[in-house]
Length: 167
Image 1 (cartoon, rainbow, N blue to C red):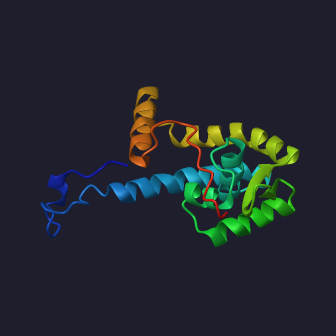
Image 2 (cartoon, rainbow, N blue to C red; image 1 turned 135 degrees about the horizontal axis):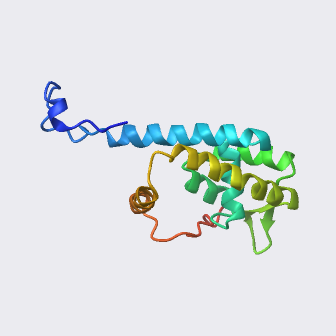
């Protein structure tokens, strides 16, 4: 999809002053939907969807280990995360345990089955995302990743988000 140039928008009201004339937010959202749809299709064979894999993968990588840490990382609300955690726990893919030093804190941990499933799914997720990015050259992919990391405000990979003291 090509970004429309300002000249193409001359007929639109306030085209010269509109801050959204390139519709970057729409394009980012559209790309996210394409990646999510491709990833969902790839994960179907694992019996997971994008949200479930995202939670498991975040715990697997040590990016979050509490429900609120997952909610912040996944940009989701606590109720949606609780529903997903309930489902993953019923499937024996993760456990929730109270922290011994602070009973208000719930820690998440993958089970052996959960770790094995994430490891099995990662190559499928990578392949699905690579397919979406196929139109880009390697240098363009690297640039896109660099720009997205900057936009997301992540200075480096592996940033830990463990949540608040009251998870």
